[in-house]
Amino acid sequence: MRAPGRVNLIGDHTDYQAGLCLPIAIDREVRIGFDAHHDGRVRVRSDSLPGTVDIAADGSTAVADLEPAWGRTVAAVLAILARHGRDPVGFDADVTSTVPIGSGLSSSAALGVAVALVAAAASGLTVDPVDIALVAQAAEHLASGVPCGVMDQLASVRGQADRALLLDCRTLEIAPIVIPAGVEILVIHSGLERRLVASAYAERRAACEAAAARLGVETLRDATIEQVADDPIARHVVTENARVAAFATALAHRELPTCGALMLASHRSLRDDFAVSTPELDRLVDLSVEAGVYGARLTGAGFGGCVVALVAAGATEAVAGAVTDKYRAETGREPNAFAVSAVDGAGFVTTS
Ligand code: GLA
Image (cartoon, rainbow, N blue to C red):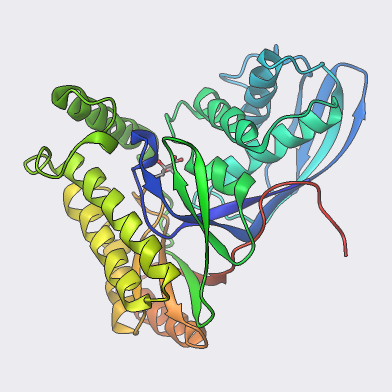
């Protein structure tokens, strides 16, 4: 079984307000080989994470405090699927992953999706892909306590090769948009682990909910720009939704300079209004612009992690080299730049 990570081209901190976002599933993925059996246990090992997870197949193992800690995702998925009536069939599983951990590329969402697919397959349970995403999201809430939205899991299950995914997080509908030839997607890790993500993320989400309540709307998806003009947090969400819609149109028309300008505006909004950037991410965006990208922005929750840049095809290596050399010299931190491509969503590995 495989489940890809994702990078979000535009539309951050909108998903949990029923908004719009535009990620791609990337060619970095979690893979799980497994054997089903009937001893009532689930045992999972990882090539990169320590320890063996050994828990009850019926979802009854307590999630909090479980060690090794990464096993909480596995235990949470089993607990949620048990509520969906999964037969408690056990399995032995081996996890390998090429999604960098703690980078904002959804390594834990990919793990949750892959485990959900394995657990469903092992017991012969058929679950619709969108429901797999919702199961993995609920498991993430349970395992980490972070009240994440559904973007990461939806991108992982519904990815499409060579396409970006316009996600409407109100209807959970997806409109794929072909990524034009002539453009490449570059991810640059700041060398800074994401920090304070759990608490600051929950705070931002609560601030959005408070703003919606003040305005008398269910979510900020229903707020107008006039209504939020004086509230930077809510203003980010409302303007970001508009930017995603404009980006989707521009991408479909191959208007790459417009896409780039919208990415830069998104970064400014995340930095100045939503306050989730860091000086390192800001610097990477500026250096990327100096190196001639169409646009760049922090991607994911913020507070460290990565920026994503839209680059003219063929220029990626030169841009990556120029940005990382200057960044390393200025900050003393070790960045990591790599091109990603859009791949199909999670499912059984098909060998060719
Ligand atoms: C994290 C969450 C997502 C989303 C982004 C910000 O990746 O898991 O649901 O909210 O942050 O856009």
